[in-house]
Amino acid sequence: MMPSVRSVLLSMAGVALALVLARYTAKYQYGILWGLPQLGVFLAAASGGPIWGLMAGVAGGLNFYHLYTGYTWLAVLSLTGLVAGLLSSRMRPVAAAAVSWVTVGLLASYYIYSQNGQPIQAFYAWVMSFSYELVVSAIVVDASLALLHVARIEKKEKEKEAVKSEAQAEIGL
Image 1 (cartoon, helix red, strand yellow):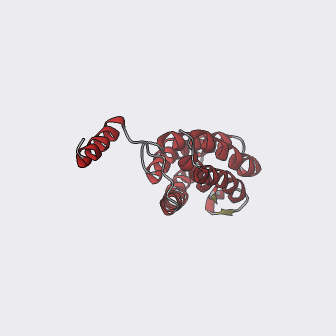
Image 2 (cartoon, rainbow, N blue to C red):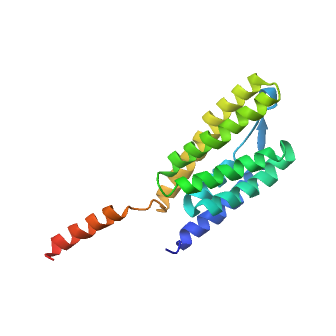
């Protein structure tokens, strides 16, 4: 099935957004950086799939994490986009973003900070990531895709057959 022009344009916009938003960060206590490149990653993944999510993760990761925190976060953001893209065809974008960020992003942020002997920073990074970055990004992406009528959720074959049978019953076949 060919992707629609709208979904390809949204995926491209997600990659560009990840690249641009990676340049703007805020620094909080304990040296925690707060930014929203994952908003673009989630947009690309939810509208275009895992490849677009991976590309947006690489774009945002190279621009943001290379400049500020090293290559570890490049891998984290790329894997987050890949997982969100894989899940976005099976569930709503807000749920796919949450699951991908919890499984990849939060675990990695906790691991990185705790390995550096900074458990308070690890807890603070986890809270910041979950409360601000994930919630803001996931809700904005979900609302944007709903407003623009772009959905990647695939109907199961049985559901398609049931709809087809109902339509045939209505016209008397």
